[in-house]
Amino acid sequence: MLPLRVAMLNTLVAQIASVLRSRRGRRNIRVLLRFFIVLAVMISVYTVTFHLLMLREGQNHTWITGLYWTLTVMSTLGFGDITFHTDAGRLFSIVVLLSGMTFLLVLLPITFIEFFYEPWMHAQAAARAPVRLPGTTRGHVLLTHHDTVTSALIRRLEPYQHPYVLLVPEVEEALQLHDLGLNVVVGNLDDPETWGRVRVEAAVLVVSTSSDVTNTNVAFTVRGLVKDLPIITSATDEASVDLLKLAGSNFVLRLEEMIGGSFARRTVGGDAMAHLIGRFDDLLIAEATARRTPLVGKTLLENRLRENVGATVVGVWERGRFEPARPETLIRDNTVLVLAGSREQLYRYDELFCIYNVSAAPVVILGGGRVGRATARALARQEMDYRIVEVLPELIQDPERDVLGNAADLAVLEKAGIREAPAVIITPHDDDLNVYLTIYCRQLRPDIQILCRATHERNVATLHRAGADSVLSYASMGASTVMNLLRRGKTLMVAEGLDLFEVRVPAELAGLAITESGIRERTGCSVVAIRTDRGMEVGPDPSATLVAEADMVLVGTLEAQERFLEHFRRNQTADA
Image (tube, rainbow, N blue to C red):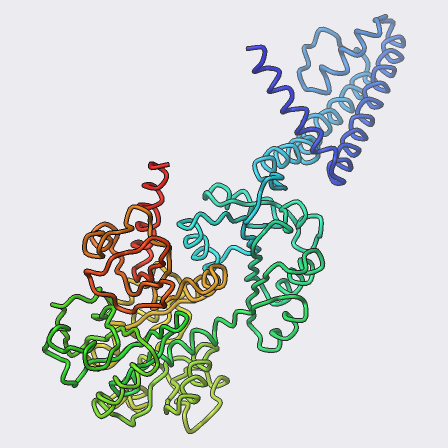
């Protein structure tokens, strides 16, 4: 029991010391001391006055009795064992009683709570949120704002065992995030001492996704401390990009432009050609619709795409559901192929299928906000026509291509060309509205391609069920871009919730054929390519042997990626 009491006493002393160290804490203690001094003077004056009045009435009491009477009356206990017999004495008793009620029953609790108890509880809560990192911390990622992007990024960092720290200026927010299981440190973002306490010199990356002003301040402060540390910031305003780079940011995320460009790349535009969606070093990843092509109704084995064009089908999309490619995979009219290959191989694919599914009708974009406009600019760069449906008159910019009206109004959609459009892109920031518009457009045009924006990752599956062919979100776009930069090009987001990622062949799989490894059965990932000293082999034969010291390029959902990393990390730990 004695050690426990000593520990509790030490904790109490440390918390009181924490209160006294702060400027506000010292001010509160001074106010509290002044209050008690005024109260002590009042009690002393009342005690002396009690003696004087009692002597006038012919009563003689000790000073202890006078103090006793004063405290019992001021605290409203009033035992009644000592009383005055004159009106002057009774009037004095009333004054003592009223002042005691005011000071002891009203002011004292309020003053004590406001200037001591509340700061003490605040210090006690703040003790749960650390203000510095241990001196051994290295290789960590520093985050400065908790939002949908950083939440998605944290989820991607954890499977690779990348340590991270979320720097939060306010103690209350830090405690809330700490209770959610996040690694937080309290500190002001513009204070160089804060960055020193989180060991910025030993970090591998700083990511700031707050406002443009805050991000500029963060980049400038960090760059003043560390010259070669990579800094990634987000920017809402295009004018902020150059300023952020001048402040020290290495890479500026323009999420609206990125998601708009991705929408444009994934828009089939009425043709069956392969549309590039990303690259993995020399390996290009593209999507192509199979609608109204000779591929429909046949399996991948029967289509013999690899033999005819050289490109490899790594998987297919079926209305938002990704399926790894198998020889028996049947191509349907709404199937979207995910292709991997060189530029020449994708050109050969386009030569075979460019004559199919051609349409000159404009793409319909619902929403003329930042994402909608970014999508329109990206489509224009690809020489694709478009129409924007916008409900707010002040957002109408081009009367020839902008249609004023509610996107839920059939007449407005028909005016925009929904009946002939090859694709509709839904860009509002309200996920509930996007679900509604997705269902509505799917009912109007069962054959149209629907691309949709999601604000929160949790709504991605709902939008797919509503009928969206492809869904993109700020969270996944930003988090995947950061991961790709952090891992130096070893991660590529193919689509929402689906990544290509490169890893070293685990020791337990070395010498086994791909079919013997059980990667797909155990984790849900599929081998897309194998990189050796001789180069990258795309779409390796299932009987190919996995060589030690080689790298595998895998495709899988985020859950499958986590299962792969956890499974083989656990086995390597057990072997060790």
